[in-house]
Length: 87
Image (cartoon, rainbow, N blue to C red):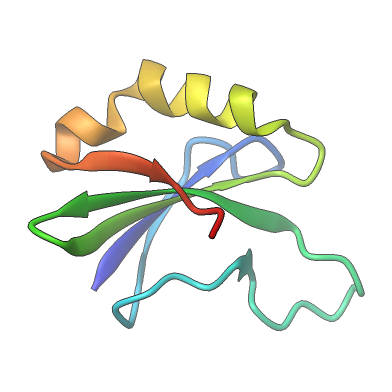
């Protein structure tokens, strides 16, 4: 299980648990609006496992999501290394 953390949008600063070892690229995975509400920006790894995923609202730039994640101390909180979710 891993923790999903949200930056921006209507659920800013919210958290939830996700099942599985890898987070989906978009949250929710199968949104019916035709446009995903949140995009995966960062993952936090501890001992090779993904322990958290940071999702940002579609209108937020990668740099802004990374800044907020750093400010909120996600990597420190989960004792993990934050890395870009981009392949």
